Image (cartoon, rainbow, N blue to C red; front, side):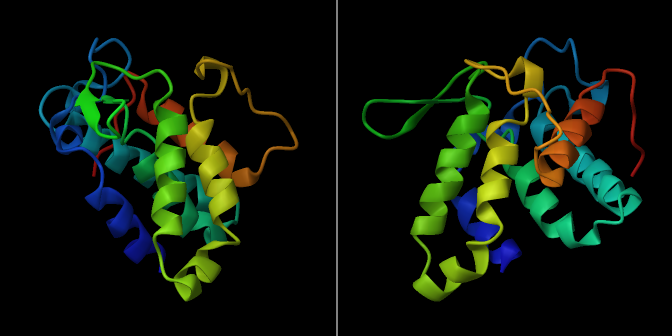
Length: 172
């Protein structure tokens, strides 16, 4: 069900996402995520790290949720909502996490009732992890990790931060 939901969510993501670099300045992310489709490479690396962190923590039960969250976390990084309800390309949207979380909620609401029930238990933590994945760098309000945060938020924040380090390379 999570894979079906993710597929539905990705259908509505602006096409420019597929062609964006992970970082328009190139300051933070590894060279493999620069240029054409760099954001997709970043999310792939982030997913690989998230799966490893889940296994290290003995939380294999979170793997599907972690993959959903890390694939969704930067999908609207280069999208700016317009007054007409569409999106225009932007170099960087500082509130992209909140926008992606809102779009996850909209996708959830578009599902059939029985499909929604399957996702109801996991979606609040996925949305929080997506919305707050930038942690201390979150805009407009920083959302640092605190002990009470769900494990999923830790997994997403840490895997994204590791995947965003310029000299940290994951071979796959």
